[in-house]
Image (cartoon, rainbow, N blue to C red):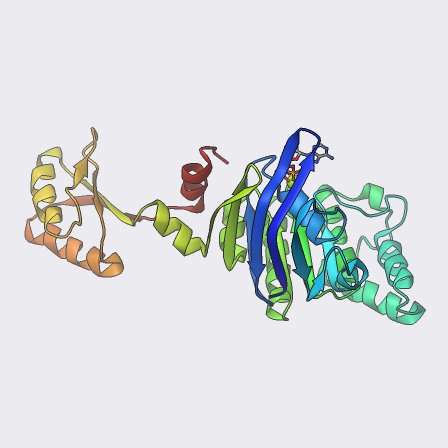
Length: 309
Ligand SMILES: Nc1ncnc2c1ncn2[C@@H]1O[C@H](COP(=O)(O)OP(=O)(O)OP(=O)(O)O)[C@@H](O)[C@H]1O
Ligand SMILES: [Mg+2]
């Protein structure tokens, strides 16, 4: 396990921010930590990154205890916080070189590292501009680059793509994927469930400081509901025949809404789709639309927390 936490607790005066959180992240995988605002995501990340002492419980990151061996932990982690932490008055290149120098990489290696990171994050052209002239997306990229100067084995990303446009977000996702392919372990928090779906091997959902669900994205979706086939027919007088056809392949009684849209639980996944298509044709039903609807992580989130994203 690259990250292992047991019973992490934290209280701020009257607020119990974390009421005993367990986490496990195998090396070289991505854990998505999801939860509504105030759930305790940032608090968890800050404790694992040794910036905040837990009131109770224990955690190991990269094999070291976050309370007893914080220096060992810090040497092996990178943290991109919820708000970018780069120096506004320095250029992008200067920021990266400065970090390298602080890490005692040596002048030459610090410069080389800065160049390769600027290149990787598509910032070479902006490298000599002060960061205060950067857009939000450029700052985010520089912030992530800054975390990687030290080549950490565990990376914490607290809402890494909040405020980014879809193209920048996709670019950042691809970088994270490359890092993981190279063996890095990532814990990321996010408000974007498609981000967790795309990046995370496993997801832990927390609410009010407690873990309320845990599993792969597919497992969580399956918990909320199964795949459903939705069929609409070309003419309303075909509904009855369609229901008859679909009843034979459905796990439950087909439901029909006011617009004549028929929905069935598809027990057998893709196999069920083929059977349903054949059954409709045999009944002579003219189909206008035939769609597989899978539960999304948004459905999971709403079902679990009662809050929408
Ligand atoms: N420094 C602090 N002092 C007092 N209360 C705090 C402090 N930091 C966090 N909290 C409270 O602890 C709880 C968890 O906060 P945390 O920042 O971990 O949530 P989060 O899941 O990161 O939320 P968000 O999605 O808004 O970033 C919240 O109720 C918050 O108000
Ligand atoms: Mg937060």
